Image (tube, rainbow, N blue to C red):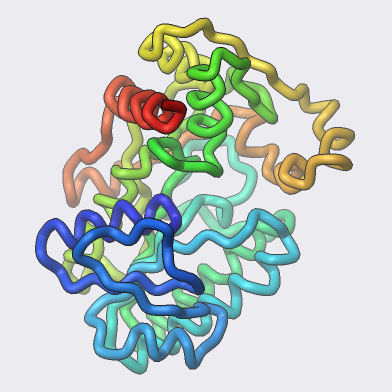
Length: 304
């Protein structure tokens, strides 16, 4: 399971909800109290069968970080989910990111215009328009919950977690594929899950719009790695790839190549304004001290 989906399922099961985890193959660890159903969300029939009889669908899906996969999979998945939720009269909560806003110099808000920049940002703007149109047409009630870059326990795609904390605990240098010194907002995965459940429970007037997830006060990645090393009691070392070297490294490392068009997230301050969420639902973010402590403990246990 994706880290966010796993945390959402745990929260819902803990309060007694009937939770079905739907994905292509069974997860290695299914949250106790939930059930599994095979589903390919890029296929309308499979998605419709998974949503039938459900009151709400929470999409916390992550496709492989490859433009070709995204271009093929995301529009198909969004269309299948919208159709399935419409047929089932189920509300649709979408675990979203902030790519669709593209390069900006101001803090990102829910009113920041959608972008036409690049590949992945433009594609995320495209699927945003799909759910906005479906909501406007009265076909389905949709809400998007937008998070910044993830970190937390067992988040294998996170630079902060897998390439930062995990390597520091192993007495190795943290690997950073960009400058670690710009202020940047980071989202703790359990906070994201709680925000998704909050919107799942919200009345209908909260739908048809996006909500930014609150984050702990802005810090740079270098500051967070220093704090993680201090918590873990290990030396802090960083191995960063300078901007001029990224295109060359990308020839040999596809993941780095995919990050090239996303450089606008890391070559300037990257701040997220979640005022709209906190005014309605209250503050709901974990301090970096607490979040990194949980992350350090997880990777310590995993190493043992």
